[in-house]
Length: 346
Image (tube, rainbow, N blue to C red):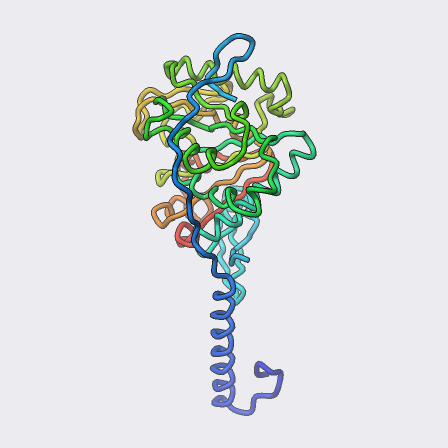
């Protein structure tokens, strides 16, 4: 047997002494590393409450749409077993049911830093390749995790004029209503970036749920025809450059909730819900064929309250009932962004 320095061990007590000494040095190094990786908290500027409430018109018809962290980075497969291996560097391996890359961060703050770089890199790539960058956002805590994009270096380096913003789902309420996903995104993100107002495609809140859904699809079909939004050659559905999704503690994504027959819709681009399990009752949402035609999807999940669903999706659960989040399977890359609390049961 050899000790840490590679020298022969002559006694059990000497070996134990050397191991204790090594552990002390390792702990000291870890504390130093943590100090170097400390990230200061974000300060938000005062919220702006004046909202652009008008919609763009296309061909004369008013449409609903107006224009240094510590991480566990792994590639999951379709295996039914789960493995979690921790090393001194905090690198590990997770194998789960859902394909994709899984990144686990010590805090939501560090998650937000990495997510900003991920989005900025995709923005640069697609702006060069296509001349535009189509981004789909959801509501909830996902918007909060985008906050680093409105800080240096990204606020000044991203070509915001080439961004086009869409919503994967929306509550059928006025834009200035507290439940509005548009309002959430506007206050925390859109009002802080120099994106042209015509590139922000929001629901027409003057319409019914059914009417807004029809307008949504009409708008998207025009944008596909004009090549602002790409089209999937494999499926014929819109192919967005990146879709940024959150996940509810029940495993729902967008407004696709467990147990609803609408999660199995195969043909429509958008659908409406009049009795949502989560208020408000009326919502419109993309279907899974649209979601899964995306070039890239980031699933952003934080908090211990979602650890059970994360475990079911990526861990060793043998349940045959798929949650909506387990049905997310894009044409391109899927990346799970998890904080340590959400990944605690893997």
